[in-house]
Amino acid sequence: MPELRRSDPSRLLADLERRRLLIVSGKGGVGRTTVAALLGSALAARARKVLIATTGHDDRLAWMLGGEQLSDQPVEIAPGLEIQRLVPATCVEEYGALVTRSQRLSHMVFGNKVIRRLLRAIPGLDDFAILGKVWHEAVRARSYDTIVFDGPASGHLRLVLGVPQAILETVAEGPLTAEAEAMRNSLQDPSVCAAVLVGLPEPWPLTELGELATALRREIGMGAGTLVVNKLWPLLPPLPPREHDDAVSNMLAVVDRIGERGRDQREVVSAWLDERANTKLDEDLITVPWWPWGLEGPKQLRELLATIEAGGDAADAPR
Image 1: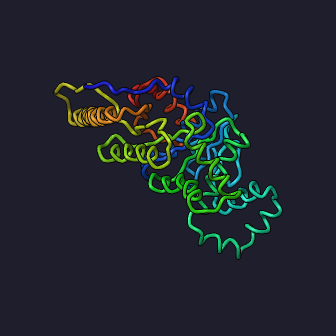
Image 2: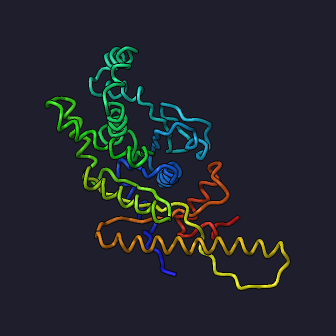
Image 3: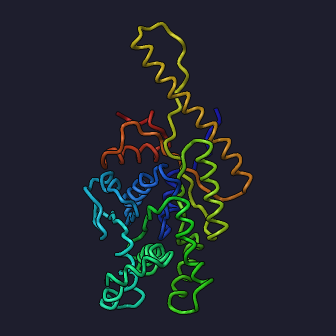
């Protein structure tokens, strides 16, 4: 069985904590929000002031971290850790206040219902406002040591991150282009911003993960700092055949299937990593184990995080 070439979790966290903005993305259903919660919790535990900001419409992020629901304003959920839902209308008005340097003027313009309806017809405005709000708090205002942006799915993310360049190419020089240029420069600066891209240990999801990393580098000029393979099943030794009653035999068969799937997944990931090695890109890899007990609150999140930091999988976790 090939050994996965994973990065050391402690070294990786030490590297990521130096960035102002971490953008978490991947295809729908791969566990972006879980990874954002794990990352934000790990950085806060390292005495960083962290905001996890999400565009998600449900409250899973709050539940995993011990809260009840998300707000469109930052809420402290643990020492050094805040969470927030990014609502486009709120971000447009708040970012407008940052640009115009007048909250009253911004509210008069962007808080007007008629104006809001007109603004919804402008392609990319909501995305630019959300990105601008996150970027301002992370880079210019430095309200937090690190912002973990639980961003949109991969296809939409490419559009969001491409808005600043689109503005520079289509809008006359002025305040808006100055903001767009500053955002673009931050996205391209690996000391300021990094992508954390999430996929599953299956052939097609891994292919899409690699394509997203390549697209961000080619289209945005942004390197993928970290690739995360989520829900990796445990590596269990094959069980020798034995004589048991039906109940024990069935249980052992389940254990054997779990181990077989873990071995198959590692072969798939290793083959994919061999292909990625040919690209000669400097990318970190971290794996998140399949967690059969669920993530119902901070206790389970801490257990999963401790297992990752120890370099193990679900089979190694104390129960």
